[in-house]
Length: 269
Image 1 (cartoon, rainbow, N blue to C red):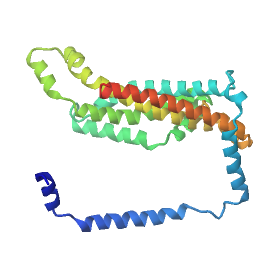
Image 2 (cartoon, rainbow, N blue to C red; image 1 turned 30 degrees about the vertical axis):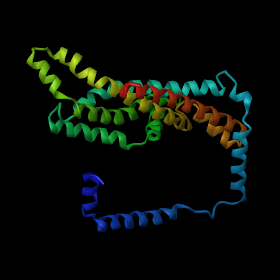
Image 3 (cartoon, helix red, strand yellow; image 1 turned 90 degrees about the vertical axis):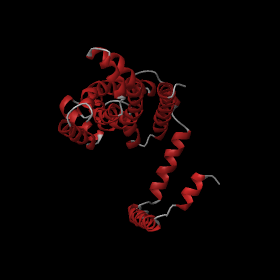
Image 4 (cartoon, rainbow, N blue to C red; image 1 turned 60 degrees about the vertical axis):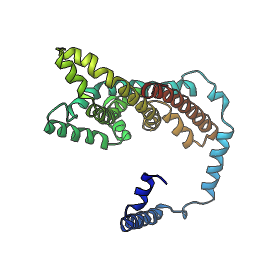
């Protein structure tokens, strides 16, 4: 047994604190079980569940392999375009807000006010923004793009600011000592430190936006969500199965590629 293990075993453990945490979690778990109500689940519910599973196992291949505007492939591309464009716009607009919320860059009062603003943006769910933008622009992909942009700003600004606050300022001090201009410090001192992490964060947000864009279609903000809800309401489970299979395949492919890119950016492999 080495010295570290001996030190860990010799430290006094706060069993009272652990016990109280366990009791609180157990009470919250028991209280949460009250949300489970099986009384309303009847034979019709089980039948619908069987039909959903049957539809996924026996999808409508004509719809799945249809490459027209009403096919799954086109709707998936539209969904991905909404998520991609919304992510890009949000990523660009989040950069100045991130610097304004970084306490090591701007005065703390200004950083505090900006963080409050960003918290307010993140508090409202994406589907609420979608409903508001639909009232302004009308239903369609443009409302989805605006929603993805606004929801992306809140999260990306926060993650950007965390990276900026961890910035290695010694590099900037060294560049100042040798007479570098502000542009040179930004170009050679700040951007190389932030670029890889910023890009990794943007790719991660794109993964999230791709899922959110699918949900936004349910309220008419473009994408594959609207045909999905229409098919479910009409009990066309084969079409539901086709849409779900296409959506799952798209998310798996995008997530695999994005993970590869993020690992290359952050870890170098």
